[in-house]
Length: 177
Image (cartoon, rainbow, N blue to C red; front, side, top):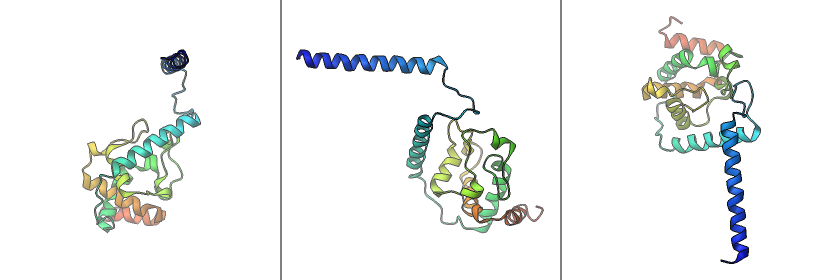
């Protein structure tokens, strides 16, 4: 091995060792603010969002979407589940905020306005949750049919006024609203 190549390789090894020590000191030094009231650094946030999006998109490729998501009874069942489980974080038609949502970071999407982009991905996220985001894995307590009813409702929700949402809930509760 030539002295030039050897010097170069030693320089690369030394640089990697210093970077590894610096990373170790950063991680174990407790200097990164982990409180939910302090936003991530922009680079950290971009990395987390990219990791989350790539992971959920890849996992959703294996999900088969049922053909009956437009079924009115399924949508009503999903509306009932959503009202019971989801509005504190993701809001509902006519809701501007909630006490729980205000304290969450990252802020969950406002599904009443934004809706969902991909049925399979929404199903996967609801079923498996998202680590370190307060999004629970509902698949531990809900069967797939219930989760699909939530997806069916989420497809419709952005089109609903507050009154339409309330009427759908009344239908879901057998008219007892």
